[in-house]
Image 1 (cartoon, rainbow, N blue to C red):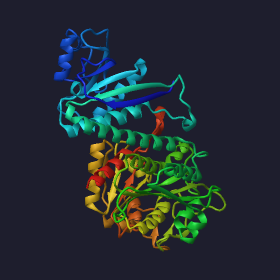
Image 2: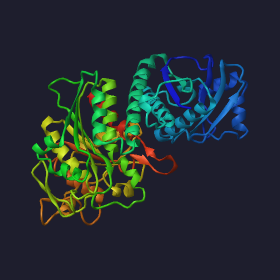
Image 3: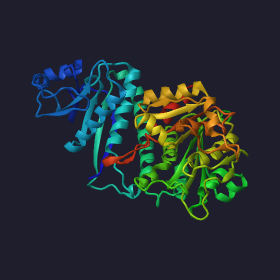
Image 4: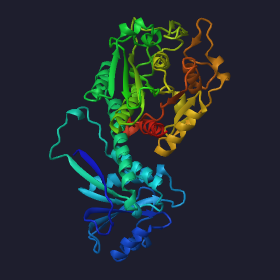
Length: 504
């Protein structure tokens, strides 16, 4: 059975609302909020009995149902573990939110009330806004289900819709709560688009498919225009680095450019560049066969940029944004680029291709050079670029490198408030010499370790005159094992950063 989930914001007293389910928070030190304490008294102390009896510890994500409660208008109560009251974090809250969504979905409930005062100890309006965002985005993520023909699915009786109403602490907070909900829904939809694009198999999600999907984003939206460059057009622009990657494939590469105009004409745009290798075999430098199927995820940077573009469009943010996606396959064949080949980038810099599996930086460097024509206020590229980043940071944080400290701090701040965190790595000149080549201006891989940093150093050669940041999402773009699939990261981070920029 497929699951739909809808949200609304309304101010109400939790003990008076008619609902299938009322959600109440329990902390690990057995602490409950004043609102939950009031509910406990109304139902004859049942919540306290559960806690005192050791049937709920308050551990993050722990759930327990109370049925046939009398004294309130809700049919049942979902006790939700919130963790430690003092050290409770946004990341932990997201875990609790996912547990609540999972429990509600399994229960068959049609609706539920999430009363902020019954859940949180903090009534700060700014924090509540973050919590609403986190709950909605995490719930949507938990109930996301990949379907290869999802866009063609017609709603039917087997599609259950769960409605969750969120009630803020004060009536005066309704406006900001609704704004938070709108942001959350746009981010959740954008993240789900990124997940679905990432999960699609490489024989469906080709460069041409990405181009078609981007055109669809602009359809019936005057603020969004889309242009697709063919290989012949790229040849005229002398994009030798990008085209060197597509040479081994029968699928033609595309350079996808989408311009969103939400700001004034004088306002300089922000440019997002997303790596779009729709399947990466490694080329002549062939990858090991084990887990090569996961290389369909090598376009998750592109997917995140398109998901962000959709969210910005839906939120009608007052900014100008350009999304650029260099899209190609990387396959071995008689016409494929070979290790030792020298190619000339759009910037005029020559590149010795020492490893054809370091292809992402080759397509990105030409896209970064192309982005300069928009005279951008800043450029952020997003790429599943290096296995070294997975070794360094694992799956929890994306790698961040930048030539501008202010931009880096802005991205870190957006990551913390969205719960989609990054960790900054150095971009020191000392690393640049590791890219020296005897036969070209630069080699496409470095020597002596620090693979994530040297990859960023490579890209920095093409952004010297720009305010630029690089996000390596190799460890965060997808998960492995039984839950294998794209995560939709870092859509939440990017949208938050753009929301922050729009308010400035």
